[in-house]
Length: 523
Image (tube, rainbow, N blue to C red; front, side, top):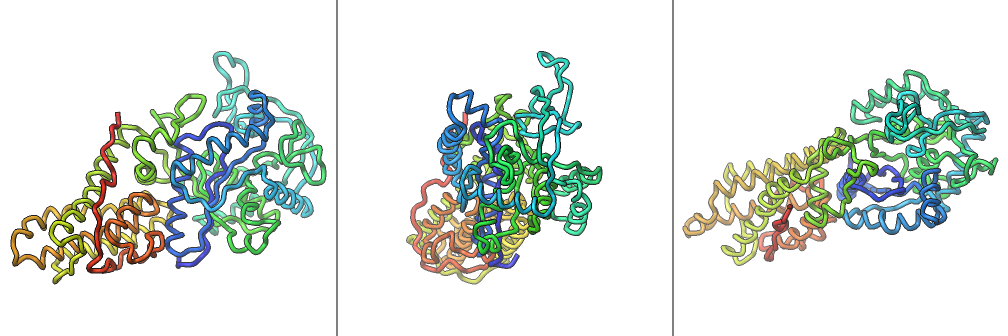
């Protein structure tokens, strides 16, 4: 992607019926790192996150707590969801709440547009509904209950009994879009990533699609259907529309044209909503489909998907309090192949913190700066002639920047970090082989010593730029300690040019660097 293009990216719209766990943090950090990279590359970047606040589950939770649904969601968002973004150092551009007027008015305009185009009709509906999923369940997700629920049909995801609902509803003619959707997946093979997710959706749509109930009349916590206020819009339809309403659909056409279409990063359990229902709704409204949908895997703890009911949900702050937000961001961006399930363990995080961050990157930074201060009064020295060993580092830095950018294009920040980390490992090996402390004892080797230390400092300059989307705090401290502030702010450095050699000015004044990743008591 060339610099300056539009890059609009969204997290799933989160359902704030409960407190966020590290799975929510995982998705949010992934999207934030991708957005930061594109922003730093000069792309016209916009990152959206937000909360989906309507539906029956929310209404029941509010009633159980003796407050109105609005009071309930206001409290959850203020006490739990906004602080999550701060805890994880997320630089989102917008946060949408589906109870905001800007959303509600634009949702009505969108639904009215589909209705006017003949894609909505009135009908009767009887089906098994899971309040936990806020979804009428397909046969494949209905199982026979056991234990206290024996003889009942239960939700395969929540293991709770399903409710048989009979309502007069409005339906969206989803069935009419199966061929258009299959054509979309065929002509744009990267519309759904990774490939395993794409294959699953194609197989699902090939079986044929049923029309979708898009309203509920049994309760009123939702956005009224514009032509019939005895119905509210089904919570999932309302939720999906946030991606369009937040950037001005129906209210600011200029901004909408600037930002849309965007990319959606979602957990694989909500893939069908985003890869089937959402593009079909857009087609029905005559609006362009998204640029792409990326489904990541589940975060497993002790081999199980995290959930509140099983008490496997870990609060992100628990990890951040111990390791810091940069380490959290680094671990979840690098330890799991994005798109596949991954396991979290405290031991693994502690081990990687020590090996990769403290001993690898942190130690490289503090050694290089300390030696510059000891041998050259703190100023970045003028390098002499470059040897093959120095040129190999320069080549590796250039390659890492190019390969990392290509990995980010594939939504694989984990692979980008792997490429960048080759530079960390190579520089540590280069110091060991060059033995600057030995060179320093020999006055005739002064030029060689200067070249070795400039190579380390300039390599660190490139690393600070390339790793800043993932670890903004540590790289910011390193940037200051390298005396690189003369080049401007770290966030303003063009990331796709980070591999160009010789950017750190000779004579840049380094400053003492406190450990970037202090020892932690990870017990």
